[in-house]
Image 1 (cartoon, rainbow over the protein chains, first blue to last red):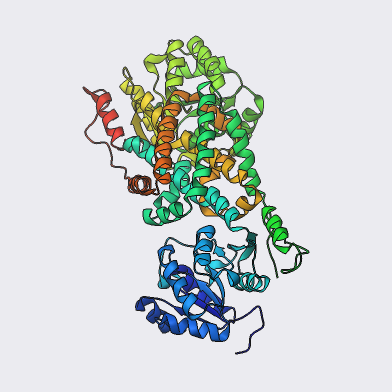
Image 2 (cartoon, rainbow over the protein chains, first blue to last red):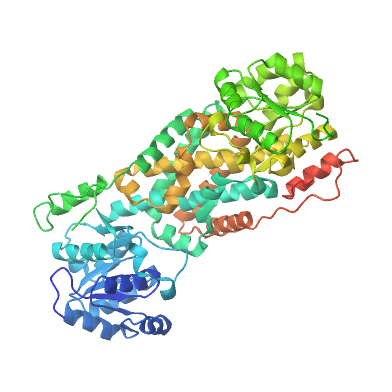
Length: 314
Length: 314
């Protein structure tokens, strides 16, 4: 099937919640797409649902190389290295992206496998409490933020392919350098988990009386402590350097607040925190304008646009 | 109107959100009830809505004394002292309760005004982001937890009157000693605000990129940072000793977690936090059984029941 430069076929490696949803979304968007999974159960389930899937990684990758497909790494972090080894062997020149959380970690693995030239990192910030092929659905990415990395040396054609795939899936594309992405998600995705766990512990330390008096503020503040611990560990430990920075800043904010409370006032913390929450509520997503991938300074200009909260549109 | 011992008329001092809702709820439950407010606007609004209200505090209290009404202090903390002064002058022997948050603070003021003998503290854990008479409604307390204090020396008849008022308003009654209540709400109501403010600050420190990547965990974790800062200050500063204890514990939990994360693992924190959240989710409210107010050890037994998460029913 002939495809335009920016809408090549899509080859999804890993058919869990994210990869399985991506395969569905790509097909729903009219893209040619197929998937691979190491274990056979998701592959059989995908086939039963009418999708093109295989447990044969070399064959899957050779097909991707022949079609110049966009290959999407959608396996859990511990499996990324093995998958990249296979890519380097069977499809070393394909356009490559991923949907794994921590971007500098994946970029380092890609570089170690000699695959950086046509790699662009991705992170669709979507998910549910469920996992596996059966939990996936094509609309998972609708209106989600999908970060597409703009690190030095990024190939503009591959960047456009990855951004187009994200847009095809209904997402909002935010350009960000890998390290800046990791620092940002440490603040807004990983730190919230640590604070929720700590708050849950404080409530439980108050016994059944305290838990019985807990209402909306405790319920909301501890909601993500309901996430399976191993999933939280994988997120937090994978982004440890950036998360330590964010946590240290927050410990200092709370230490200062503690001294001010001991002196009788929380006014400085609550005024600043309220203003920060208002800024979050009032954020808006202006489109990036005037940047063409491949033009001079396009990467620096996309980074700056992402820092301003702007989003890439077609 | 003749009333039974436990359903005397209700006199509400202060017609803001809580007091105004309480006046409506008492009337809706078939109780004789009237209210007072210092400023005339809420009084006029209450009258226009068909309620019995006055700006004359001495007359309101003399009426309460004549009817042996249950008097409910529902003014903001800074006004409690002045209202108690008037109670001591015009109705020194009425049954007295309050609906103000921090219970040891109010109990100390009541003692300073010589009114402890027929005082039982109360705290309906209900509210909205709105305030004032116009924001109130009779159903505000439906299914909310209403703490009724069981401090040493509590009069069993007054205790029953206060618990019956809470039940008439549709609330769930939890018996707790004032200091234990304050320690519990520090953990589950006040600490959540401080952590939400700190999390909001961490997100904003990441700029528009971080705020643009923020999703559910950040939104939920910072929700109560949207509360008006002066309201949060009043809650936290009024309960400073208990909140400092809870905050110091949490700072230590986070400090230990920080060291473990630096060593590569968050598993201890996430396992414990997840178990704590599950305990919160799975709490249930068994009724207190076998305790009659006034019987031997009734206060100690109600305290123990409250610590077990049990609730008082009629």
